[in-house]
Length: 178
Image (cartoon, rainbow, N blue to C red; front, side):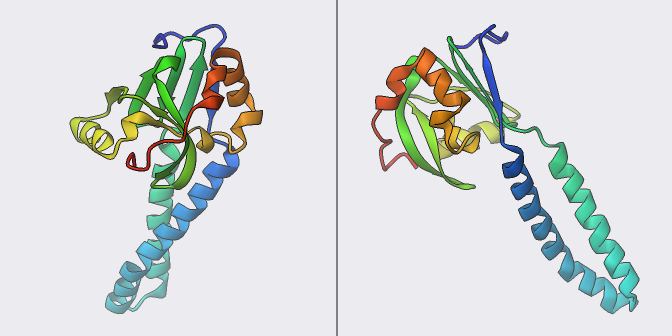
């Protein structure tokens, strides 16, 4: 299991800036759409378009700043193992715990991921998050495709070739996993 202190050869990968921007754009659209019915009610009650427009702007900015303050997911790869930190929970495992490699379905869509033999949840922000992560099987999934869509040819693939070349020969995950 990777040590809590960084290994000298550790590779740390964050999500791509374009992926984060695309996610933020989707969320901004969602915030504006969610604010429109409330703005319509304000406009009908107060008969002021300016108040409705200010409400939509304030609502959107408030939630947008909240989204931007969230921790960006991190993937740490070292000779000792893997550490995945999406923000509200943390998985840590040895290379030997990796059981399968393939596409899994997550809320953000299908993504290529490592599937662990057993849940490796190291910590969660609270008990509700812990239960949700374990119930959905997310404590067994490390979505490497979220960090680098062409991960085989990037720093993730190089780390696998250096420390766990057998990962490329793993079977696809079971259909009943997710």
